Image: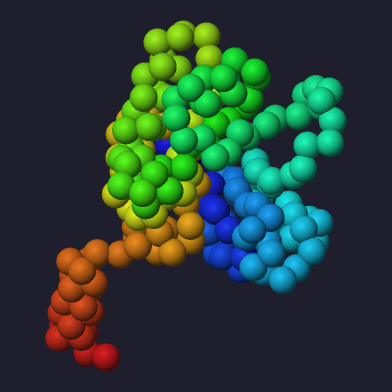
Length: 182
């Protein structure tokens, strides 16, 4: 599974890109509004940082945008995903965290969409797990075979940390000092 970072904060995008773990960015007008910057300026800066896919929410003003990859967002049931795929969407973004927020299992939606796309055999639309809230979402989406997870930067940070890693580093440093001194 590949990763996009889900933010309009170019500092976070730069950090995630420098980690070498992302291949794209998802952002939208809500995230950009929080930044206090102009949409065009943010998108232009993102393109200077990331050499990969950038999914930025735009207002559809034409019905004949041939050749433009589209990401249908706000998917909350398998029917929406299937219709988007059959209409030619390059990506569908089921919002699993928002379903979890209303006491529905968002991971079940990912599993259903993956099963339907696989059974169809002729769907090239990629599944972007969106509205990821925690590292468990990431692992479960990867186990289901989702193509991409768009992950907030704070979740990347959570994914890197583990208390046993921290304890191990402290022990290695103490042992090094005991053997070699400061």
